[in-house]
Length: 116
Image 1 (cartoon, rainbow, N blue to C red):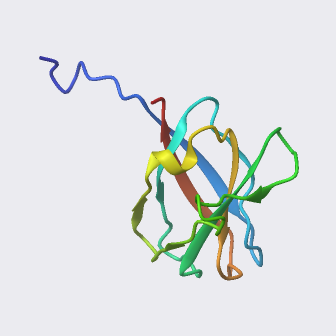
Image 2 (spheres, helix red, strand yellow):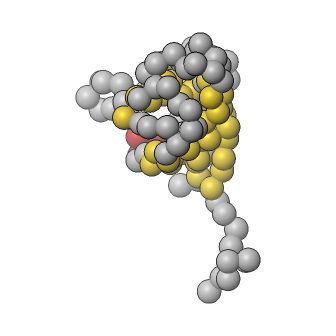
């Protein structure tokens, strides 16, 4: 059994920023990992969060949708952790978070991902 000091996390963290007066974050390269959660900032304006994905870095971003064709939309609140079902994000390498409202200042979100 590993002690806490021997444990090596397989969880990756990538910070993305939604610019002041913006809704979409900058692009994150998940590099072969799958999104599992998002840490939301204390001053988040939006109450919903969606995602877009691109096939290549800097490529055209398209909404991430469920099997029914509707955009995946999560109800969120400031200063919370949003756990997401990794099965919904398999195969996405380049991703952006999109707030449902224009943000009043720059907001940093931490994307958590892991190899599955």
